[in-house]
Length: 321
Length: 93
Image (cartoon, rainbow over all chains, first blue to last red; front, side):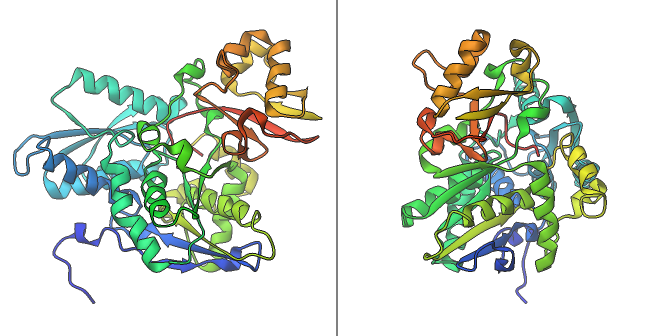
């Protein structure tokens, strides 16, 4: 086995596994890139390291200087990944977290020494972003990396995730990923399109609007600046919505191929299956999807063991993505 | 063609509290025209002055975001479900 000097050196170079047993069509191969293998447990390890490295390069953060504070809105995984990186680099992290995320996420943040600032659960991620912006204005001394607008987020995927996928799967025809900050889709999508413009980039979006009570009107909506900066509307070929029931069903079906994954990965697989169904019978296709994280953080949701109707109802109220 | 349009929470007060309404039309544009004719209060929330979709509004025909399948010209079939969703910071399920 390879010997590593730091846990941070374990980020990236994740394995890809064939999950075509779940493909609805024999002519369509589906491959899953297992981002849960990253040391803090999710795809967000890549951007957390990239954001902190960029801030150090730009002089926003000074390694070794005491009492430096970072603040970031996150529904979980970015905060957890940043907490691990900050612990190793000696920075204090404050995470603005919607109050209705799964309890495991809260505990992981605390485990790595992050401080949690609650934002109203009913306002979802929009509320956390809005609160973080307000806190940033009030505390200009806090470093606000702002994953939704920071080019170091898609850049991590342009430099690492995209090249890894193309090296392992040169025959890729479609890339399917979730649309959160849009960092994965913008970074990987831009890289793949530059190498082969015929590769189709599909975004999967959960129907999150229903639970965001904090929206007073549509003008309170939010499009991540990195989506606009990277010309996301032109880069994407298709965007499909996946409903909570499909997400839970496909999260469960992942276990048929031996994978225990988080609910967003079930949503993305549901999107990959929709994508596979558009491939004509006389053509072949190779779809690469992202498994964002493993299932451990979601055990308290009962997603694998409870009645699916109950799980779906709870999924509408708790942030999993 | 008749489609069922699902109304998001944020638009329900301006639409009499309805969660879904049946609307006639052969394209997304026609459906939205008919919807805003019968509910004029929501027109500025759905469409820009030039008839394009509001920046923070996502419209889906069944599962597909219409921006990637023809925009307001996207065809609608009988029985299709049209979902209006506000754009939000990524991250909920």
